[in-house]
Image (cartoon, rainbow, N blue to C red; front, side):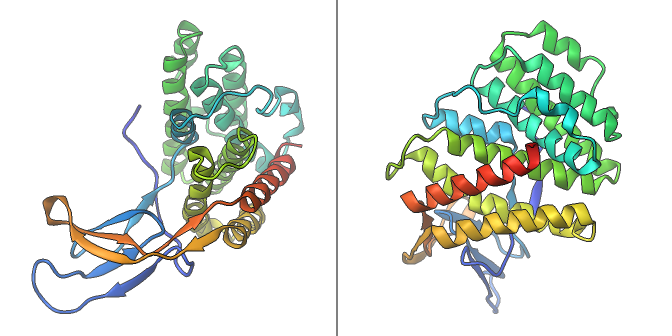
Length: 297
């Protein structure tokens, strides 16, 4: 897997964290502190901001599989829908959807349609003017590794990164926003669909709750391109999903402690976290399904 990661800033003004400044002198004193809703946050002096990674669909599904998620057929967007996507907005969104589908199929060993889905992504990419993101040898590699789920998973992850880098380097921020939004919604929809019923402490359900922070990061990135009408519309949809996360999950407060970790880095622990409940799982699942249907119909 390539060691490239998309970094975007963390949205402020939410219950997920707060920032405070500390004055004074000395090597161990804090300049900026961010307390997030994660178990631990590493803080280094003279570091003005903390950046968080938005995981690719491949990374999310890999985590879900490790935590006990089991494959389920019939969740991906049918290729028959491909002909419906004629506008740039729907093409870009469903480029992201099909990319997430590709990641899911390769991660969980559903590889019989991998080549057809990849061809659909390549075709949509050409129509969006990002054909340069696809290496000429890539299709041959897929054909040579058909049936090898590990290789196909690596290829799908690589193609996702290459598409992102091409879009970024060629000033196609609008298309990038839409692709990322489509991939996020499809990934969330699939993961929610892998859960049969609520069970407290289920690691897959907890990972669904973690997508709240991922969504905040995604919104922060998309905000840069919100002047575009299509991006603005998608941003409104994502904000409505963010509100579902915010209102349905339960916030549990906990004490905050500061300790020294490795390399004398200061580590902030606690402060509280959001907890998934049966109600929040149902609400988030329903909203993810609604948004996904609006994109793929």
